[in-house]
Length: 295
Image 1 (cartoon, rainbow, N blue to C red):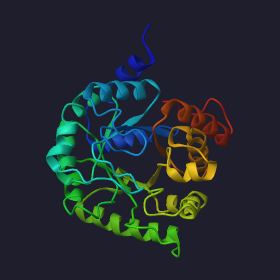
Image 2: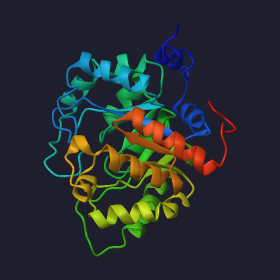
Image 3: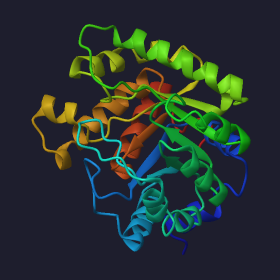
Image 4: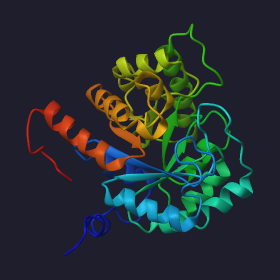
């Protein structure tokens, strides 16, 4: 009898451009769950756990088996809480080289989480389909060109160097996205190949994070798919008084709230419970079961 993982792999998307992969994913009439795979020694939640290539590939298989629709792999910590160490290009590639090809063979779309256009280009050449840029095409001037040249999709995330409690964070995020989308258009990246991530926790106060969740429909109104990434983040721990490994409840709550306000893609460490929560929430919001499309 085929396992859940076997079934997912044999029915997964075959080789295609990032644009094709993204379009096929977004055509699914349900929330999409992106599993997080950090091959780093210092990520805030799981740093060091998957630095070994075999452990990383085993974790990727686990995430796929739990129901991940796509995987986001990164080899440089971009954690928003301070202390992240910049990784030289050669070291970032060395961390990825023994892991990324094996992850890609699992058969679901892979996103490369990187600040560097050269790393993105290498990963796309290996078969990654999506670039996840936590500086929204505004840090490395070559990033947009690399995405366009490879026919890839891109996740544009909002970021700030530091939090400013005085600003209207939704207006700041919207203005940032306007600049990023202009860069994307100039490079030739079609709008349907773009998802927007408001960057929960990155250069934001707790109140900013809550405002973004409350007013997420204003970001959705920009017209691109919206990705939300709240998984295990510190503001959840501050609100609920929980350590990093005890923030699943807060993660689920924020993802369900984001779904209700129009988010489409959910980047998480704990795939199975979040996928279950989103499936129930989506069925409830749709007011019907089974949904019209179950692919």
